[in-house]
Length: 148
Image 1 (cartoon, rainbow, N blue to C red):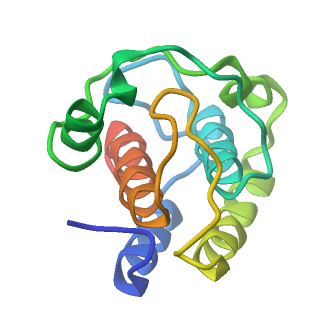
Image 2: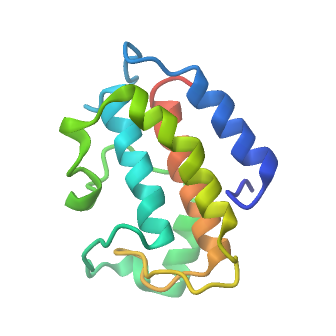
């Protein structure tokens, strides 16, 4: 299983994002490449506690379900996301978002894995290890959305 805690996995994400262009089109969904990058970057900010996202009451907080979704089940397409993770997407600039991505990955990796970590708005309390896997999978999901 990949994780943002693994240097190899972070480097692979950097290689993938380097192939993204402003003209890249999604294989599904409504994001443009720029909007997707802003969303992914804000997800990294949420994971590090730099972006507050409102609590959402979901069954994903139950330990068994949480574990399945974070570690095993494929990411479904078109799942609603927190408004805070879409707030900047319309005003985002592609070059700026792509330039920020490596810095945000490094900021995540520089945190102590043992915590403390912010609560996830849908999954609730999560360990640094769980954040590393979930965020890696989420970014990969969106990169796959654009064929990279």
